[in-house]
Image (cartoon, rainbow, N blue to C red; front, side, top):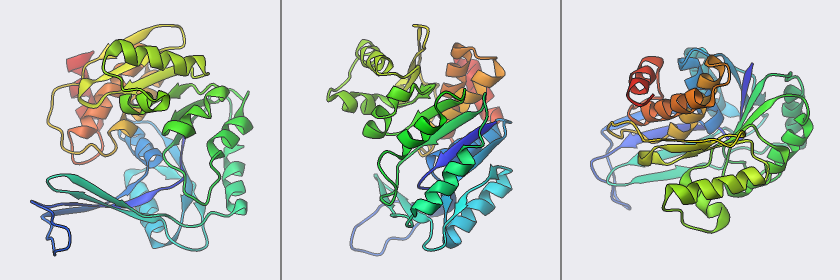
Length: 302
């Protein structure tokens, strides 16, 4: 079974405008409300690709109820910890000449509610896959990723981590099965600017030296690079297409990789190509990738 954890989910209000002027009334020409959060996106795309998962995390208030309603419409199973007060955050994403985001802060999460999530994670079994993704709200400890991985260590659970800088670096000692930084995040971890494939590979190997098993580096329009635990590396250019919406593309890559890995009985090159195709399919669409969109792109790169 696949499980995803989203510590700080959101209800995303997405608007498009011809132009945006601060301090004035701006009228939109497109709007959409979508349940969001990295783990939730992974679960939705997994479902679109034909694989069941269970979305875990915390929800609260009317916005949390809407996220669960949307997941129900997608056929995605969920088992969130319900918080007694506040509401799941609302993120406003304004797309005009430039993209502007205003992200909410989210509800308070008590230690007792944190333990409820741990209790759910304790039920995972050998062979399960767990995706830990995204930011941590200020009411959770900074080492929550580490606490979870330490708790599950040695139980044969494949753990995928998609998080920024410190969150990611601090869990490498627990040997995550897969991590997915982008090229800018990778450079930021080591205080360098990476400009060539060789530099990216060099610094990705440093993450392996720190404990990561497999490293998948997304590079937006430049494609992706992957380093495997057995010493191989792959490069794939981005499929051709028009960028429509970058939100969720990285999460889609993770879902695609997991799908490819499961369907190929653990072939990393197949999983890598499936990840690239799925990430690109989401980037080329208003919504998250569907199986037909992914398969069409896969034919152009695999």
